[in-house]
Length: 121
Image (tube, rainbow, N blue to C red; front, side, top):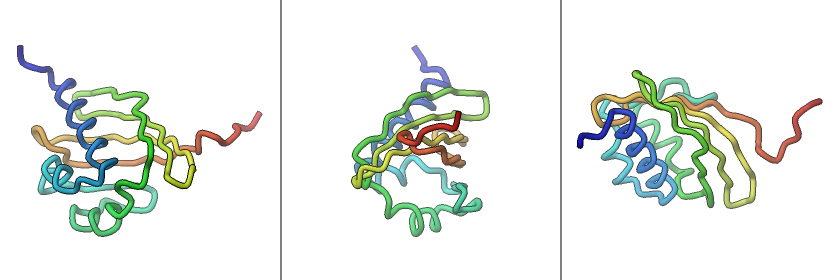
């Protein structure tokens, strides 16, 4: 049975998070399209080389990445996750990941509030 596109996207995303968590650059590079771009509140549509120069040093610094939601659309996947840095800081972010075939074409990160931050009444 051939896996659906959504299932393939989810598998690739989970492999990407696992490789990032393990700081396995070779595995991440194999998952990224040559035209990969990365966008976050700190990075505006940077290319692959800039991603590895600016963002990759954070790989392997989290003790936890818990994917709470992976929802596929016809254009890509929306991910909601919680993480914990080695210093104990908790985060809750979302990402939208687009694909080119089986590879990740782009990642757009949206920062959320730390999970231990109280929400206003």
